[in-house]
Image (cartoon, rainbow, N blue to C red; front, side):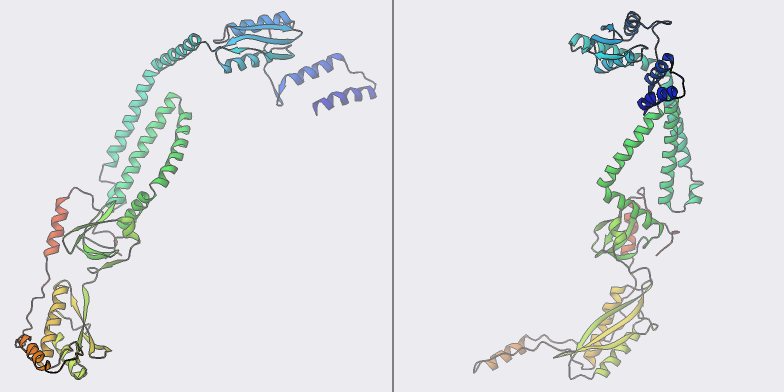
Length: 455
């Protein structure tokens, strides 16, 4: 487009009777040469009103002699064409020499024939000069670096002091785990502010942007690598906000049964009914189906009992119900149940259930006592429990001997007991064991807070 304008403007001036002046054409061409990408380019004048080859060569030689690494550059100018020879220490210096030549007014073209020096002594000299310059710069920055470090330490100490106070964090977040998380964020914020102020003092805020970009990429990579750890941490936060259990609760988590000892930021610790420690990752706890036997004081026990097919079912039900109501641990409301579950080939199966209060009685003891007393009641009422039936084919003369052997091997039956005063009191053994375990590691974090909302 600029070339087209150069042709159209003189033609237009001829049509209107005015000839373009040589000064206009030269000024337009010179102005075109002075622009780079539409913006004016800076020009270096060799001397006042001088544009000949000797002046260009002298000006370039003076410039190169005063620039480190360009002292050996040779300049030859002929009809505005600059030929650069000699050598430089780096490729960057070689390109810089050509750029400087192009900025001289009157230069038409530049032929760059500069060679890069690869001599070891020259390279070592260049490296030494750079190292010396860096050391000199570092020495000059020592006071500023000391002040910057002092600022970082002051901000770090201030953040640590504020984050270790009890207030206002306890008022803001009653949950201890959330309190700790907020304190860590506040401490990290103070430290980041100190680092930002120190870098600004050193004039290195651009470095902070590069550092944050690298930290973002590194954080993304680390996030994928420790995905399970992050998931576990988030699960700990959610479990601490709405707690599905409390210390000493009898629970089943992912088929693991035990009493809750503590909830940490990593795992939930149970004391199994066998006295073993069970540590379940919180991510697994958060997603698992949790059965909490302690969340409701009333709990139903149940079992089945088989009676002979010739026995009176209604009588058996009435006797079982009467015996359940005699047990102090069995609640009257809800009322116990004795139902016929199924009719088998050789027996009738009764389903027996009752409710008990876990705050005063032990579940296993109440169920055991109910089974014992109902068995005694059935024996006293001659309600036979079905026995396995076997078909045996006997040879001639062997039947009497086998019958005598069976009769001799049968144990003598003891008279039934009607004692209904069995022990059903609640046991405190596991509560004491859990308290002992919690006291052993009293300094370990525990996210179970009695004041937190319960699910």
